[in-house]
Length: 351
Image (cartoon, rainbow, N blue to C red):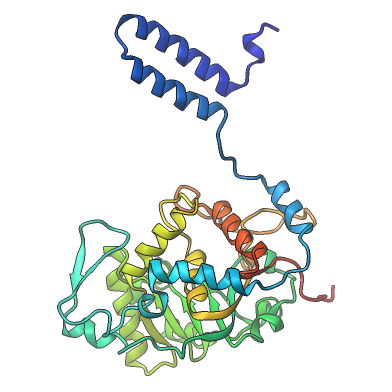
């Protein structure tokens, strides 16, 4: 084997690139440009930051000491989040923060906005609809690690339960994920895929919402142009039948600022996951936050294969979200005593 064949692929790439640059430099390439390319190649071969792999993360989780709340760290982090995003005042669109005539600039689509008119203004609550601060909150992701976890009772004992993306809560899953819900997110894409944008029949949708009781349904109706119409249609569908559920719209200014906040902490994705947005809401509204079902890996702590969701194995779009990066940020908050992540079992389930 010759020496070049022993080099790792990245080294071979950069060695070849640098040789070409040297030849170009001798003829016409400016020194500054050559140095820039050299630095980029060096960082490509020897990156400054590397995301730990799954085994390293599992090992860290398994060797964590007993979790303890750190009130000083919690207060400091919440102050940072409040200074950035004003969660208590801005997490939802209200008549107070979005008066008539205000332009709501979409957070997921540049150069597009809607001006608040009479029809829209009537959809908004007068102010934040919750009695803040909330006390103990469970934020429930949909990770496959919840399957056979027996965590339903612990989840339901919280004062306020938040869930992601209209998850199934039938008796088949209740022991693992609970059934109480005070707030659940609903992306417009779900309304489109499951209920055909409510264009043909609304009955199935109304029936399926009953499992969430008297909850708020939190929708990003002002994130993308394509999501506004189905969000409004969802609002009117529930309003027309006097359903127990109430639609509230995520404030695009809040979503935009939360995205910037986490990007500054190392989450580099086209868009944050719904779960991380919801955790951000909980950290701003709740005194104590415990996460369940936040585990973006294909095996559990005992190296057994698990599905991506507790109810299916549909994988996320990795070009859009950065789930491992998000989990690492949340795990840092766990280790700092700011929130608690539950990733194990809560009890035994009979075989």
